Image 1: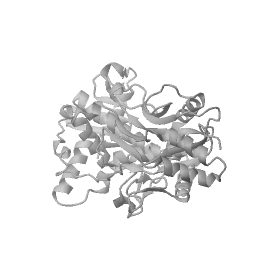
Image 2: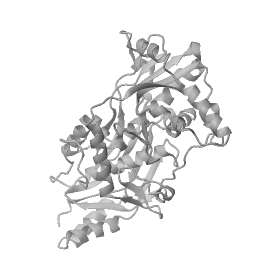
Image 3: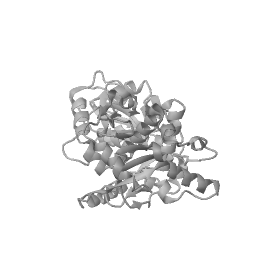
Image 4: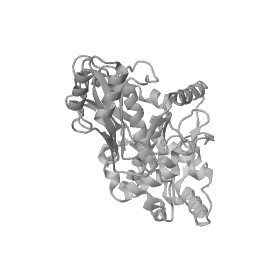
Length: 412
């Protein structure tokens, strides 16, 4: 059996505490032993629900959400020993953040974006009833503000799935000893030989939903790279390369257009598709990528808006990138001070607890007999280059002034 006829990769995910409730995202869950599991039929059912919603052709309304009011409502509920109201937990039903608006005279800081009625049947990933796009969540916003407050806002955050250093040598040995055996036996032996793989989290609390979404998004990308799942948008294909044995790594990075900023610095528009896929021979290193891997990364990047609609985990990852950008901009431009908003209490987990989702630190290897080589990957989302003042674009048309004026009477 040819050693370049196998793809392999490993994944780590959530905590057993979530699995006990059988909460899933894209068919991904963890059993009571903390081992990642995947139900293909559940993933397909979720995608079908999203496709049906996407045929409506309707556009969600633009909604304005006041952060000072939101946090005051959250503090009132928590201080009284109550759960957060749904409007707080779901940020008024926002499915994306498009605008950040400051009203210094009214001591207000406002987010604006499309919003929908919320379907929270899966509390791990509540979605809009119209489009199925994940809702921006209060817990993730608090996590982003905490990351920025301790200096993490200037550093990328994400994850990587690290294979043992001798993985390639072991795969060659299994190829030699099982070349005349059945494919199923070959794949099983390969997975056992490689053994557990480590998960590395960086820039984000290791027990946060942010960490979970990063790993879950990477998990699904690797299933595409392994050709275990078909990418749910046309024209992407897979990165399988029969030409030679070669390691390939695929990972997510941010992809924004320059922030649009009003002349007075009181309004900003977040623009761009938020995410792109990069590749290389090693994770987070774009050198020595095969032509086939580069072509796959280019195709999936070009179709990221469609992919985020078809696979909600990527829209969720887009939202996390936006929240990180928001938190970094609040810090860079001192927007909270400008708006007279004090959110210091939310930085204390004892006063403002957020949901804890411990992420396992290793997982078994997942292998597939398909062609190609060793596959690795991760998520590395950074926004520093986006929020730097010299990288922004001035709004000379007055678009932001109109959006800001429209929001004045519409804030809750």
